[in-house]
Length: 400
Image (cartoon, rainbow, N blue to C red; front, side, top):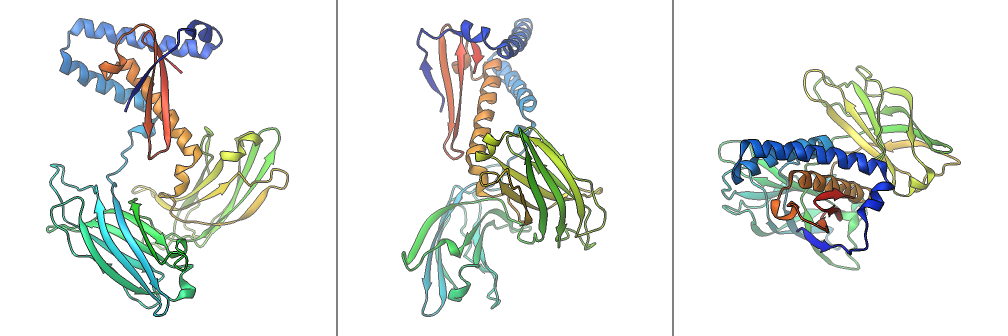
């Protein structure tokens, strides 16, 4: 929800502008755009509906200029699942109760309620106990199941075992769709301290558990501000197609640093050797909340590229005097909790601020961004992202 707060009269926008030339240039561009927009409105005489429609189109264009990723589809994964776990140590039996789900997404664009069920699988499964399913719950996006299932899991295997839960939408005329997934490592439970664990779990996109292999890298630091990242090679990559081979390359990035590098594409190998070094401009003081992301990709000229896995190297514990060298396991990190770190929250906050600038330029919604005298602050907050952004508006002009 937007929140309005009146500014105190002591604050001087003129003084701030004089000390910030970049702010002056940005505001000049915004005012020029606003003037052209107002002239167009005056000439065409749009009614309220047409003006709102035009503002929406302008906002899309502004968002795309500010950050193209804003326009990318986020998918239709949403909702949560409530699960309960209990371990019978005497019989080495893990008991799982699938209680219910809430706020699931369905594929019917008309908003019609769907038919959902939950399926689960133990990994690894040395006893071949197989997949288990709940009954189908009809006509609701918040189904209740209250069904109990069991898996034989030896106590010594609890540290490595995990349960994959998938919420599926049943289809009479075609294949069922996965509407969300959650992977629960059994090592996260302490059944001796707490015999029963019950909790809500947020659903994520499907995780590719077939990804395998390791990436060999090294990192060094050259003062005052050069981070040297070397991608040496990879071992035992998992092929994505029937050719049992790949054309791999690696993308390297440090979130928050405006640089993305890419190795050469090597043809027909699952054990590539690159030995390429990239330089990131990064101060040592920034290591606290920075990390390096490596993404191994299979180049496909006939269709979209395939992911061969990612790995993350934290700079928080990186020693700039001794560097780092090692082999890191590849996995599917699309649902990694790392995305909810402080860096991610800062990135979301920046997107909020840029979005607020776009809204203020187009004056949409008009009730908040209409012409006015004096100063006010508009704030937008997202609890799930753990971030917020705000913009100061003085006499109708957006200012940070």
